Length: 184
Image (cartoon, rainbow, N blue to C red; front, side):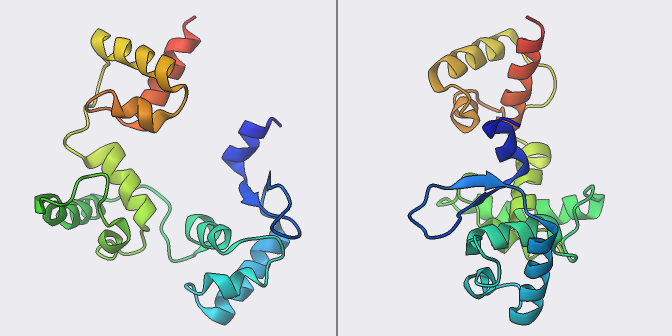
């Protein structure tokens, strides 16, 4: 498997001391078991203590693995209509605050209003499905032209490419670019 594909399915792991170069590898069943035990022992917030139980894993890796894949209280399926409504209601007051933009919303705080969802899930759902400023549907020729220029300029840094195309998200840009490339 190539390094880039590994990165999609794996997590960053630091082996041995912190001076060694990092590499990517999947979480093992044993590491998952150790993570469950450590979270049971310390609770789901003391990531520095928890990471000490899993050799070669950092507190951030442990937190990400727990919240993104293992926590039985985090719902990972489709969003319900009620969840979408709760998310929209939780986001709106923040958008009225002049100091807030969609780039700096407090997603962890917003997630407290949507049971069993994380801040990362809330941010992704808002950005990809609910944000009224995001354009949905077919790409116009002008957008395709902006996409080509964005990729020439920024490569596959989709956050920067999307920043150059009003109303389009990183995922939309990446998906559209892949569609264009597959037609060649």
